[in-house]
Amino acid sequence: MSVLDMDISTRRTPQSVRKRRFAVVRRGFDPDQVQTFLDQVAGWIEQLESELHTAREELDVAARRAQQPVDPYNRLGARVAELMRTAEEQAERIQREAEEEATRRLDDLQSEVDRIRNESRTGAERLRQEAEQEATRLQGEAVQILERARTEAAQTLDRARGEANSILASLTGQRDMLVTELRATRRRL
Image (cartoon, rainbow, N blue to C red):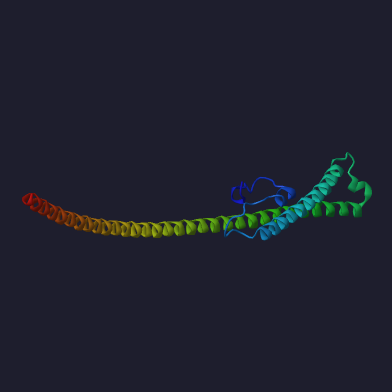
């Protein structure tokens, strides 16, 4: 599975991001830069998970206190009640900020994935065009080589015919000469 095939909505752990490997291709991305970026993303995820965990713990503490049968705010006094309210508000604020930050970082990551996907498509199209151009060039060369071979074959055939005609003429001349000589020899006998 490539980074382009990842479902960004699926929860990823920092370890799965750090361990993610990509195929090395010609004219591809620098593997060190990709790994550095993945380490940064994993760090962001760890930080967000830590902040979210802290916020949830604070929220759980506040929720347990709120569920107690006796209102602890009245019993401990106005100041303690105000501190508890402030803690709850802080927990809610931290959770909200963590969720907003996670959403923003996921959006940034999705934008990066989209950018990489577009670059990959552009690169693939460029490679396809280069391959087609190379195929056309090679086909042209093959046609030229075939034409030269045909021309050379025709020339060789013409030379062979000429030599055959020359040999035939020579043999015909020798035959005529032998026939004449043979007739002359018969007459003498």
